[in-house]
Image (cartoon, rainbow, N blue to C red):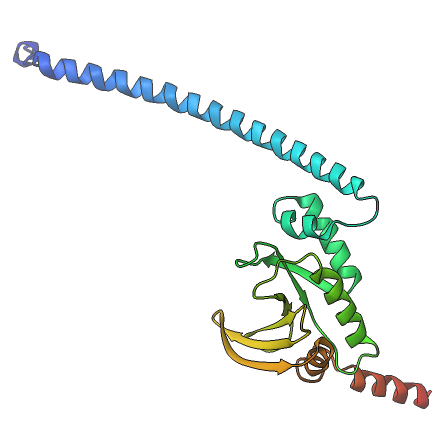
Length: 217
């Protein structure tokens, strides 16, 4: 059998040159990818260290409050600090409020509350909490804003209270815009309306049920 080696044409010098350049480029790419991976891991380690130190700073700031929460700091920084966020959550929950997201207009963490139908003392407690938080909240046209949690679907509700005049507005919103608003001369009047119309649990019916069960026994 005759050899076919003499039929193989040598590669043009330019093709050999390009293939060698391609091989070299692949090796360089592999090295670069390895270096990038190492750099990414280093960046992640440094980021984790920075976050840890930041939370330690937040903890020291929290300790420095000596049991008297700096509401402005908690509302401003809870979005960037887990320590401040958890502190604000505990504080809000202690007065029946919830923490939810950050408002685009004030750049502060949002506060929400709900009300039950005919819950004894609820209006006074919510009013007290709103006045407590309002002192540290950024105002928009003189008003502070609180989300109102309800069982209503396809819309959102918001309480807007003008701190100086006492005037309050309850707004029904769809897609971020007002659909309907209700005006009140006082904060308490607005809360009474929320209690009567946007309640989450029917405390009146529950109380009646409990009474009947007790009578049956």
